[in-house]
Image (cartoon, rainbow, N blue to C red; front, side):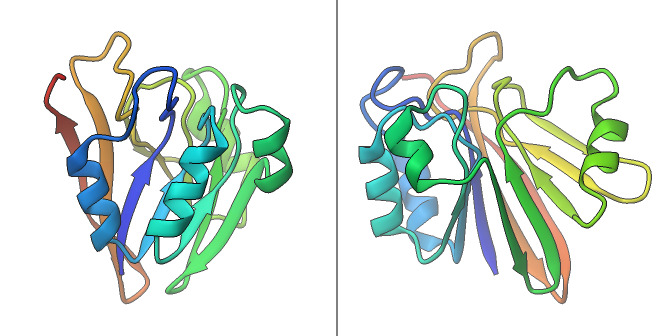
Length: 166
């Protein structure tokens, strides 16, 4: 099972569209995961239309229309892996322990908000992933997104993709 992970797309405020490389990854993925801050329902519509399966939540910059269509926390079980998707997890300090306590029934937590890529494993085994932003790098050297695969109930082949500057 091929996954694409993204967050903080901020379309059309930070970019007119997603980068072509990311759209190509979406087209090839079995599951697309988006951790909020869409900004416009148009991007949600397009990802829903192009994704085989979309697992997504809203973010702090998403208004009433997006909040009406998306949960604060999205959950899915993918080949035995219990996944949760949330936009904000708070300060980086103590994040692993705080999230492990808040998501005891979760194997992988995908989050966003900071635009800073993150990959750690909390005590107890919770994997925390932030794919960064594909459209707004802020203080990061590159815009980013992630891909991974799930095989035999294991998350494998996680790659942080760095996008060229536009």
